[in-house]
Structure formats: C-alpha cells, structure tokens
Image 1 (tube, rainbow, N blue to C red):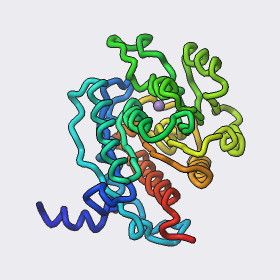
Image 2 (image 1 turned 120 degrees about the horizontal axis):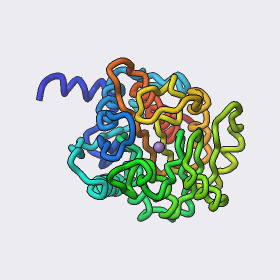
Image 3 (image 1 turned 30 degrees about the horizontal axis):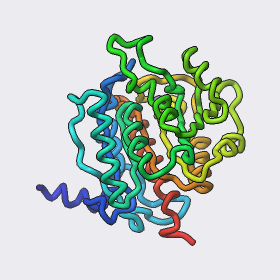
Image 4 (image 1 turned 90 degrees about the horizontal axis):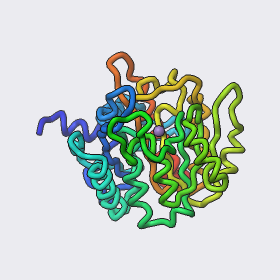
Length: 303
Ligand SMILES: [Mn+2]
C-alpha cells in the first residue's frame, strides 16, 4: 500500500504476516452486541494494536532484551463483526481460533466484550480436556449468569455476563480474581460448585497471591483479563467499571507467576472500550499482552 505500511511492519510488535510459523497470533474480536452499560468495546482491538505499534517500549526491562526480535507475532485480519448475532460471532471466533491453533501458534484474542472469550474456549475443547484446564479470570464480575434476562430486553445466554457460566458448563475449572459484585443467581451458582469455581473477592482486604496460585490445580491454564478486573485508576475505559479493583503491580506479578507455574494454552484481554480522554486502558492492555507473551515464550531468549 503505502510506505507507512512497510515501516509499520518494522516498528510494530506484530512482526510477521502469517500465523503459520508464528509463535503468537492475535485474533481481533471487535464485538459489542450484548454490552450492558458503556459502549465502545468494538474499538478495543484496533486501539490495543495501535499501542503495540511503537507506544509500548520494545525493550523489556525484566529481561533487558527487545523481546519482539526473538518472537514471531502475527495478527489475523480484522473482520467487521458489527452485524453478527451472538451465535454468528461465536462461530466466527471458534473458526479463527482453530486456524491459529492448527498453525501451531498461541492464540491471543483482543476484545471486544467478554462474550468473545467463548470462541477460543469452545475451540480449545478440541485440543484439551477442559477438566484439566483452569481459566484464570481477572474481572470485577463473575459473569456466571444463566442469561441476561434480568437487565436485557433481548435476553441471550451468550451475553458478556454469562460467559463464565458457559465456560464452566463446557467443563473448565474457574479461578476468578478481583470479583466485587455479583447477582444472587451467580452467588448461588458458584456456591453450588465449590470444587470447580474459586472466587477471590476484592474488598478492604485482598487475598494473598499464594492462595490464588494454590487454587490453580491443573497443569494447563487459560488466562482471560477483563479490563474491569483492574482498578479503574489503571484501566478506566471499560464498559462496566467498579471501584476498588486489582492493583496494577499485583496483577502483573500474579500473571507472571501463573505463567511460570503452568502451561498457558491461550489468553485474551477484553472489555477495553477506548475513550478520547485517556489512552491508559489500551496502553495497559498492550503492556500486559507484551509482558505475558514474553513470559510464555521466555525459553526462546533466556536460559
Ligand atoms: Mn467480564
């Protein structure tokens, strides 16, 4: 196209065009059909990708290396998802994840509302026994509703507030971190499944990191980060913000310890709903992406 396109490929953390032969492939999920409060999550992926193109420092200060020189990171083309029903959106993201996994790359999805997480989770059931995979979820909300009939005029069992209920029904283990609001039905659901759902609530005191790590009993882990899991001071641009969330460095350290202790099979960052007044959220998401990918693939550049 233009010389801009060429320089972009040199200057971005996204440095290869095909998922075939790539270490990581980004799946864009610009979808926000079922959001309940603030809009804008459909623009999350493009803004996070912008932040990955030269806003995030390529030099990783933990490893003292430019990580992107050791890893091949691809990004699948964006598809307009605005007209898709929740069922069509799910089918599209299942197919995208399957294409990444069959290429041998690590699937990393950028959303979009939290319902998009069900795409990779549904696809990964073909590769792993979900009972042997723990979903580590950073979130203000449990997302364990049966459907969104209590607040939506067009109830769906694929709404963003239901995604972890669907994941649990697929057979996954859940470790939920940063939780600080839930409905009665969600409380009843996680209380009824104490062996497969561990809820770590945030309040005046916060759980120890050791207790969270101890709750992850499986070898395999999938990480889903809802921007509202972090305190709104760090991730303000999100559809349903809640005060008093996870501290930035607590979250970064927890993620890094989870990745060191387990085999991560996929990840996502969702509910980034950019606003004109602050770039913190998309910049933070880009930083999380880069540091998580570095941790997952550190054998490529460190002993
Ligand atoms: Mn969520």
